[in-house]
Length: 215
View: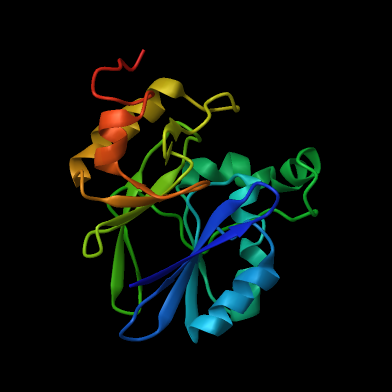
């Protein structure tokens, strides 16, 4: 699987272009904006976009989803239904953060823990990881040992939990109970910043190191 990170918006959010090397079918994960940059990368990759995937409903991750899906004539899959709250507030979010005005976004398929999504021959497992937001999901490629974790986990940090309907304990438990068991060797793409591995964060991240309590 080919992976291309495309930082978008003033928040430098990691939009990801995932391409199945056998079919050249692609999925775009978390297109928060700057659609011209995303479309340019799709052209350079000679890929055929098959679907748009969303980890959660914050504006920097999904503001461009509806327009991009319409442009390519493809469905939006994800996040979990508990993100209806945030997706319904996209116009207000864009105003608050000074981003271009966007409309509400309704996915063609809500995703639940244990679901899978497919593009080409690539299969991603869906893992519900609440905390940063209630309906946040993670996409995991078991074959590539790669996770797209949105704003659950970062290199040296974790997602914010000072938003409405965030929960710090839920976030810590999601990381420890849902992500760590996937294996220390798993590399992950965070919503912002550089990639890392679960092993690196489990041993060095001050927010979720083995000895840190959830309370």
